Image 1 (cartoon, rainbow, N blue to C red):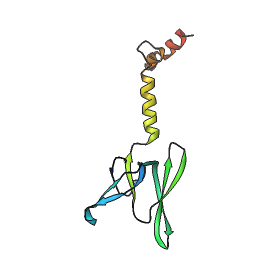
Image 2: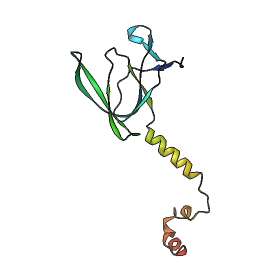
Image 3: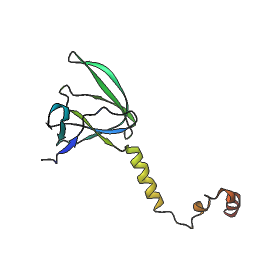
Image 4: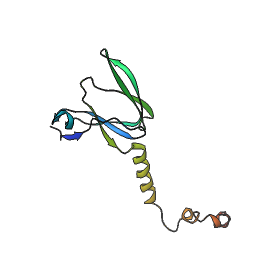
Amino acid sequence: MSKEIEVYRIIPIVGECYETIESTRSTGPWDNKKYYSTLKPRYVGKFLRSEPIMQMGEPSEVYIFYNDITNMEDTLDLSFEGTTCFIPVECKSLVKRKQMLAFSKSFKTDTEPTRELEDMSNIMVLINYHM
């Protein structure tokens, strides 16, 4: 059995990134209910907007996300049972950029010519020196 994690029935904030997951269990009274899941969360990306729809004859809404891994918009239908939950996460493209920056910094040394180019006042001298 998978490890159970706490999940949240929240309304996503525009511009923030999320994983989605269906809750498998809840506890507590309706005004202080906590939700848990043993399922694997799915990254949906940055929340863009919600759009109203009719679901089984009842008004509902779908959430539109921009998935920065696939570079596509992803539409999420909320479950009729009300078990759709979200986990706020850091955007994957931001994580990827941070990892790439850390990786590239591991190769830099203080003696590299590119390090010297940070001092823009000497740029012409350095360009001429390397020609």
